[in-house]
Image (tube, rainbow, N blue to C red):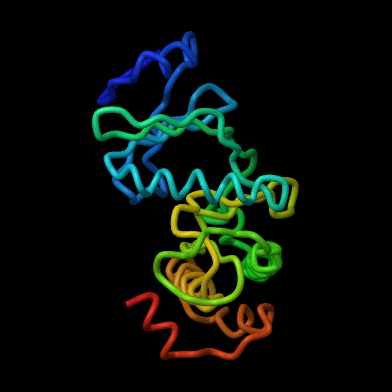
Length: 209
């Protein structure tokens, strides 16, 4: 097991004994250390314990409702958090095969948005830290955080900003991410139509600027 740039607690070492850790750096901006553990698990290591605790809480709430990583192990030691979770199968919407087909990409984005925003929030204790609203949101609804398998949405990753919040936070980042990854705003109108919304510049700028 490779442990480059990481010192694991004994309990984590025991659980991962014999498994290879491969660091993931692509499409990753949080500053956390993220490792693929064999073919079944993801290990996140962070100095921001609260952020990983939030991600765990969101994943636990969404388990059985939409596709998310399921918690296997969580511990915090010496001002560091270690979060082991199952690895979702699929490819992110930032992969070239989806960027080459913007209309299909828009369909999948709209499908993913409907799946998440239709989650029943009854009894949900989690509020999005960055917005207020009345539906469950991702909080960072960007192409690399949406997974697809066999042509359909299979799940969501990096949910530490998720919770009950303003759906426009997700709309704004979805629009931004589509334009950024395609390098054009040519398909923004198509996305708005698929989402069934009109563009709200004030909210777009509030959440993305």
